[in-house]
Length: 338
Image (tube, rainbow, N blue to C red; front, side, top):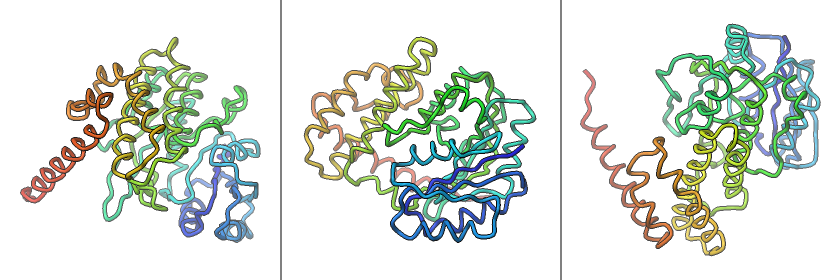
């Protein structure tokens, strides 16, 4: 029961040894690792070759830079396994990562196996959805769980896909999308399967701080803004057959608009066209955000200000964040373990 592990590498050399050590140290041994070097310029290419030396289970391919989706699609084309998974090269996994995913799949004979993960932040770790229970869901319910902010998330690295389903239905990652493309891929995959098995046991370590990706207030780039297109595409493709999924997609689209408006002012951007696009998009889909039960009242408190004064919305949101952070620090300081 061969598993193909596709590792898409682009300028992540300083993390690659740790990622590869964790993958090569798996308790489940029937696997291959396909490293796709997507035109790295930081020495990652040489590290990839060294990692593959004298290891027949590792194959390295070098290609011109085409982005994460392009690299993962390349891996799909060259995969020889029955199942396939897509970890990131700046993260690491538990020794039983593959073994447990196979076990989750075999116990239920599901078309997709999903595991929990650790969210690794600076000096802090949390287990995503700690306390949740294992479950087997039909594809419609699983799609809702996938889309919800507190669900099992759209990441490609905590899901083991059936390669036959992918190839039989010509599924590939959308190279037009720069952000949230793995969620878009998962939604499309779910439409061709019957069941999904989820176990919240954390098997994956998501390195939240790698490469400065959590620099929240850096200016919005076209790549960051492309996440809006992803959610719109998901909404449009699911409106008829899965209306509840479309509602969640459109409310997520609005939430992303609000976050980006806040970042726009925090980063002192001057791109008025980008701001107008964010405001207009939010205004078009605001009813879904307002009706959503996935977001708190405090998240919706200032939403009516967005079409009138996005700057005032961002300012009041900043004040709200400061107050909530102070209250949170006071609660932590006051709490004393028994």
